[in-house]
Image 1 (cartoon, rainbow, N blue to C red):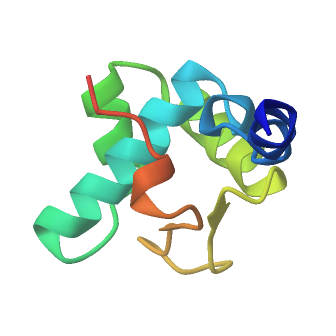
Image 2: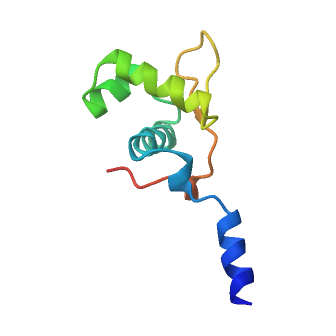
Length: 93
Protein backbone atom coordinates (compact mmCIF):
# COMPACT_ATOMS: atom_id res chain seq x y z
CA UNK A 1 0.00 0.00 0.00
CA UNK A 2 2.79 2.42 0.91
CA UNK A 3 4.58 1.61 -2.37
CA UNK A 4 1.44 2.50 -4.36
CA UNK A 5 1.27 5.90 -2.66
CA UNK A 6 4.97 6.58 -3.26
CA UNK A 7 4.77 5.62 -6.94
CA UNK A 8 1.69 7.79 -7.38
CA UNK A 9 3.54 10.75 -5.87
CA UNK A 10 6.47 10.23 -8.24
CA UNK A 11 4.19 10.31 -11.28
CA UNK A 12 2.81 13.75 -10.35
CA UNK A 13 5.34 16.39 -11.41
CA UNK A 14 6.15 18.90 -8.71
CA UNK A 15 5.71 22.48 -9.77
CA UNK A 16 9.29 23.19 -8.70
CA UNK A 17 10.50 20.76 -11.36
CA UNK A 18 8.54 22.62 -14.05
CA UNK A 19 10.45 25.87 -13.67
CA UNK A 20 13.32 27.52 -11.83
CA UNK A 21 12.79 29.76 -8.81
CA UNK A 22 13.33 32.88 -10.93
CA UNK A 23 10.97 31.62 -13.64
CA UNK A 24 8.38 30.95 -10.93
CA UNK A 25 8.60 34.55 -9.78
CA UNK A 26 7.97 35.81 -13.31
CA UNK A 27 5.02 33.42 -13.69
CA UNK A 28 3.56 34.54 -10.37
CA UNK A 29 4.05 38.20 -11.29
CA UNK A 30 2.23 37.77 -14.61
CA UNK A 31 -0.59 35.86 -12.94
CA UNK A 32 -1.15 38.32 -10.06
CA UNK A 33 -0.64 41.43 -12.20
CA UNK A 34 -3.30 40.15 -14.60
CA UNK A 35 -5.65 39.25 -11.76
CA UNK A 36 -5.32 42.68 -10.12
CA UNK A 37 -5.32 44.88 -13.24
CA UNK A 38 -7.54 42.87 -15.57
CA UNK A 39 -4.86 42.73 -18.28
CA UNK A 40 -1.36 41.22 -18.51
CA UNK A 41 1.79 43.20 -17.76
CA UNK A 42 3.97 44.78 -20.41
CA UNK A 43 7.65 43.81 -20.52
CA UNK A 44 8.41 47.28 -19.08
CA UNK A 45 6.25 46.49 -16.02
CA UNK A 46 8.31 43.36 -15.35
CA UNK A 47 11.53 45.28 -15.94
CA UNK A 48 10.56 47.81 -13.24
CA UNK A 49 9.33 45.19 -10.77
CA UNK A 50 12.36 42.88 -11.04
CA UNK A 51 14.83 45.75 -11.57
CA UNK A 52 16.44 44.09 -14.60
CA UNK A 53 17.21 45.13 -18.16
CA UNK A 54 14.74 44.92 -21.03
CA UNK A 55 16.72 42.13 -22.75
CA UNK A 56 16.67 40.10 -19.51
CA UNK A 57 12.87 40.26 -19.35
CA UNK A 58 12.54 39.37 -23.01
CA UNK A 59 14.90 36.38 -22.67
CA UNK A 60 12.92 35.14 -19.68
CA UNK A 61 9.64 35.36 -21.60
CA UNK A 62 11.16 33.52 -24.57
CA UNK A 63 12.35 30.76 -22.21
CA UNK A 64 8.95 30.51 -20.49
CA UNK A 65 7.20 30.32 -23.84
CA UNK A 66 9.64 27.70 -25.13
CA UNK A 67 8.91 25.59 -22.02
CA UNK A 68 5.17 26.01 -22.66
CA UNK A 69 4.59 27.80 -19.35
CA UNK A 70 3.17 30.92 -20.99
CA UNK A 71 1.52 31.79 -24.27
CA UNK A 72 1.90 35.08 -26.16
CA UNK A 73 0.25 36.42 -29.30
CA UNK A 74 2.85 37.62 -31.82
CA UNK A 75 2.85 41.39 -32.48
CA UNK A 76 0.26 42.03 -29.76
CA UNK A 77 1.25 43.87 -26.61
CA UNK A 78 0.15 42.66 -23.20
CA UNK A 79 -0.80 39.23 -24.50
CA UNK A 80 1.03 37.02 -21.97
CA UNK A 81 -1.07 34.21 -20.54
CA UNK A 82 0.16 31.80 -17.85
CA UNK A 83 -0.64 28.20 -18.83
CA UNK A 84 -0.29 26.70 -15.34
CA UNK A 85 -3.14 26.51 -12.85
CA UNK A 86 -2.77 28.98 -9.93
CA UNK A 87 -2.09 26.23 -7.39
CA UNK A 88 1.13 25.35 -9.25
CA UNK A 89 2.51 28.88 -8.96
CA UNK A 90 4.80 30.01 -6.13
CA UNK A 91 4.09 32.93 -3.83
CA UNK A 92 5.31 36.21 -5.26
CA UNK A 93 8.18 37.45 -3.12
